[in-house]
Image (cartoon, rainbow, N blue to C red; front, side, top):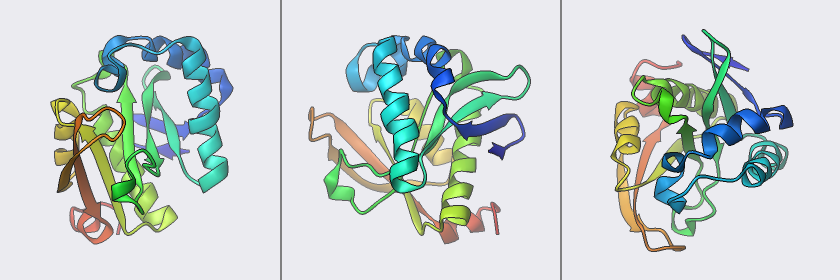
Length: 180
C-alpha cells in the first residue's frame, strides 16, 4: 500500500469489481481505445487477468486508487509491460484511468508520481515510459506535468491510431525532487 497526500494506492481484489465496473461503463473512460464503456464482465476479466494476474506474473502492476477523504475508488494507476507495442520493448509503462468525475483535480498526476516512486525506488527501474493516443490531450498533459518528454510518435499496430510515447529516467525523476 502507498499513501500520498490525498490518495491510497493498493492492490486490486475481486471485491473491487462492482465499483470499478461503474467507472469503466462510462464511454469516456475508454473512448480513445474502444469508443465505448466496458461491460461488467470485461471489467471483471481485466481485474482478474491484468490487475491481479500481472502482479503474480511480473511482480508489479496496477494499483486501485482510493481517495482518502471518502474512501472512494477513483480508478487505477500503475506499471505494466506494454506488449501491445513491441517497438518500445523492453520497457515498463505507467498507465492510468480515472472516473470522469475525478478528472481535472490532479489525481492522475499524484497517483502516477507515486507509481514512478515505486518503479524507480522499489523495483529499481532505470526508465519508465507512457503511451497515449495523441487525440487524448488530457493524458498527454499529465505526462508533461510529471516531467516526461516525448520519445517518439508512432501508431497502434492494432488500429493504426496515432500514439505518442513519453519517457523519463530515474535520474531525471530524482532531480525533480522526488525520492532520493
